Length: 82
Image (tube, rainbow, N blue to C red; front, side):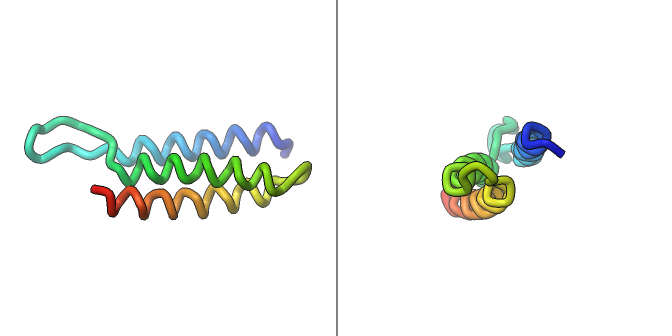
């Protein structure tokens, strides 16, 4: 597997996670994205970029771990912001 394939798979996974975060507002009936989903997406992106920056040339593991930790942390913060 080359690095572009891994980056594309990571982006696809993050995009799929964002789509599952849609909720319906009980008062208005409008569909919107939850704050937890937005926080998770932002955290995953930030963690991925930080892992890339810290990891240097061979940073695949750091990118994946950074995206995972960032997603969990961002989703937690977004959940409590609701």
